[in-house]
Amino acid sequence: DELIEEDETPVRWFRANTIKTTQDKVLKEFGHLERVYSIDDVKKGTIYHDDYIPNLFGVNPREKITSTDAYLKGRIIIQDRASCFPAFILDPVPGVDKVIDACAAPGNKTTHLASILRNIPNSIIAFERDSVRVKTLKKMCDKAGGSACISIQHGDFTDTNPDDYPDVTAMLVDPSCSGSGIFGRAFEENDTAVDGKDSKENNPYTEERLEKLSNFQFAIVKHAMMFPNLKKLVYSTCSIYPQEDERVAIRLLEDADLKKRGWKFCKRENVIPKWPRRGRVEEFSSLPDPELCAGACVRSLPKVDGGIGFFAAAFERSEGGEEEDD
Ligand code: SAM
Image (tube, rainbow, N blue to C red):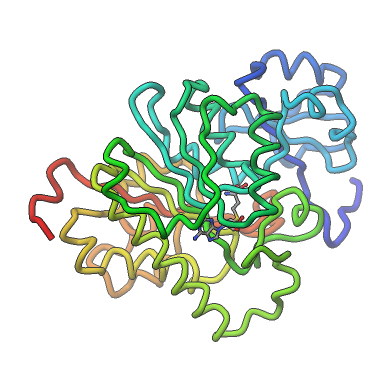
């Protein structure tokens, strides 16, 4: 077996961009690679078609992907497996749901959403407040062929008035975080920022820094949950710290305004049920059903789970959840 360097991802993941191609065509394009059926068998010269996320493939990190025509023309998009969880869990319905991606650049999840929404024009509004990163977002949406589907808004998502968006039914909130789950080359691929900076610069993750980040994360998701006709929301981070993960989710569940609006955790059966690593049960010990809460969350550990460290929690609001005026 080839050794994997300290800072290297064990598997390099890419997804077929179904705006431009299909998974069968991608398999043909990479037909020179031998198909393997377990992530543990991914070696140079092989390709693995993921069990959890549709249209997703894994290859050995030494495989040359970025020089292929498929990559250069946007038929495939390099995106870590766990980073594909949020859009897949949100599962918006093409032609029915209108989606906001609240923290969009560089646009991995936005373009994934466009692909799921079959690229129907004006299905997504993507917010990005950073003026440099918003350009990257635009480039990525263009390259993916999703520009008609995605309307890019350069600005702070928390400055929006939720009542101006009565047609929005689903939302992804993937805010800046410590980036503590990210390592190696994934830094560039995911281009994850804390306040617009490479998260490497923000080491070490002091309690104080984590508290600041989690307050920001809570505030931005709470704002999102105030959108009047929102039915489903997925919150995600590439953090391995419960402060930014489960504890933010708990604060949201216990928030009086959000309770009144009927926000709850989704059921595990709708949150990649077969993915084994769920939320940390012990974090939910103060809530009535810790197992149920943990089931609404998925996590991945850096390297051990085949890519970056990641967390996602899925929330939904039942029909008629918000009857009271506030
Ligand atoms: N979802 C992206 C992807 O998968 O490609 C990665 C998002 S990155 C973790 C967080 C992004 O949110 C950064 O680009 C940051 O500038 C942006 N951001 C942070 N706070 C924001 C806010 N209040 N409004 C809009 N964008 C914000």
